[in-house]
Image 1 (tube, rainbow, N blue to C red):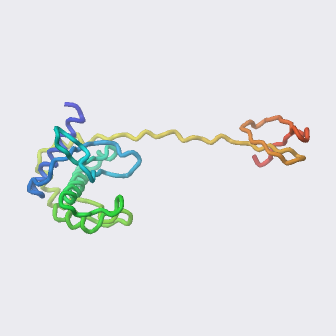
Image 2 (image 1 turned 180 degrees about the vertical axis):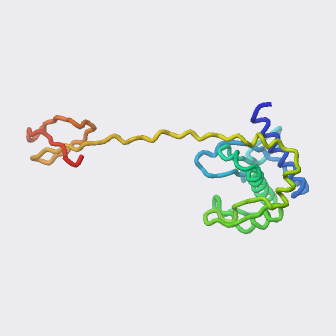
Image 3 (image 1 turned 60 degrees about the horizontal axis):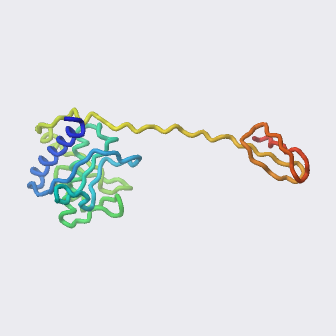
Length: 202
């Protein structure tokens, strides 16, 4: 079994256990992925539409960020449980997000019924998520392979482009300017027949 299969197995196992404990197994199993979220500092997301068609069954998608997979295990579980609250709210027509990311009090109310502690942050609202002490103790009783959560997607650093220096040459008579990356350019003004001079501040 490769890594993708293993992490998928463990996330599905966690989903099923949380679903059973906090939702009476009401939630439809989504397609759970571990994938890159690029430069966005998102720990996970749940789609607002059923974007998958699996064996003729439409499903939502929950993604866990590959760039933040190796956070402390309980934090990753908290992210999964956070997205499961969105899944529940979608199924019950509870609008829990304003705009693209601001979580309102409806989200907090539903989340705190289901083993989570929610605190407020200015830009994202009632979204900062942790497990309750009771949830941590319960999660630790589950048979989950925590080692698969020790992996992380490395974000390759792009080399910083160093801007090439540009020099300004000016005709001393007509003040016509020429830009060049050549620090020792010798050029004559076609109108005045004077040699361009490089500005000293360059």
